[in-house]
Length: 271
Length: 303
Image (tube, rainbow over all chains, first blue to last red):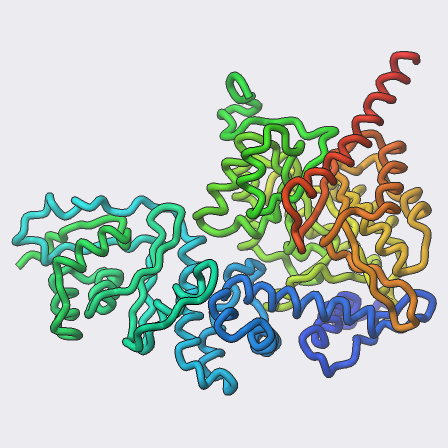
């Protein structure tokens, strides 16, 4: 008798069902090893399967430790690895590129009960994630320091910029940039002498990644420019955010940091 | 290197076409870059994990280009998931192809294993059953990858800790069939042979006797760690965190004696030592390769 097509397809699927059966216990330490495996000559497969379970969890915890070294230094290795293990089991990677992993880690830390006494920790993790994004971002030549010299002053307000692929802003209600820097430097961690909120700017104009503290209003200013808004609008928004915003200093700073790769004055934006 | 790079295509190659035959190489680790560039004679070639260079730009690409200008590079994929039942990731194939196009590697390899299921990436080389159904699926995947990158790959034998009850084919039979069906070559990891043979209680020599050595285009050597299985017997872990074991060196000598010289890589991925330690391991492989090359020449001369 000819087998019905549907049951043939079902059989083919079941012959390839090993991945669906093998994977669930990998991230679930309570689950039993899958039925479809064994040791040789009737030997058990519990410890054998645990090799895979261990490889998966440990290598992913290591990946988070590599991406978030300052975060780990703040809480200590033991705490960090316990916290990372929970995150790995809840949110394993969805890309085979491990340098993409950990995008949800800062939000996880923010909601992590045992890290509540360190409210700045999530923001330090956000800076570290932005640091790695900048590290792997596409190469591009930043604008030269005199890039705005050729634009007539009366048209500067209409100037719009193209963001460098590496440029990132991380805003914080805590001195997260200083804490990040203290915990990334070689040697002993220095004293934290500020409690002021800090906004961070991450750039990689060439091969080295830089993390800077932005002056008052600087984050709002750059966020507008990165979104493609014209300079005049960005200055107005920054002044509204913080009356101490200094347009000239911020423009010089953004050119020095390499936040943008191109500038253009749109004809349509002319008033 | 003096003179112009060798032009072996219609358009000029971006990098020199260095030969890699008979050379011993080492895993390329970022922490060794300065020592490698300062070393007048480091190793014969460098192997990279493809995924580490799949970012858009930055220091990894700058470092790799500087290496590739001076030495041959072997491109080793770790997470194509060729051994998985689900379709290959088209985006990943595209990224892999652009690395091949960009760096013109001397060797390209992947694993008989899988690492992604549905959307989760497990970051480990997971095992598969050896059946007619998996053979068909893996052959399709190899063909798809070779089609995508425009050249044959070398497929690496895995190290495994469990067996699948449903397996009906021996691993060597499975690999032999893949070579026949897809035209791929093989990457023989001698440490994996030793690890799997120990873990599953068979003879590494018998496995090698059954291995299609004539299709081997590269050899891997690495260190392993020791644990115990549920019955208290030795269970070896393919840890890549130490020197190559004596027993693995012995097997390697036997393989070279039978197969002839093949580019050989020392893998070291964890607890990475200072550059001279890794270099010394590669030098030890080079001695075995050179000794065999000389004796082959002698026997040819004496006909």
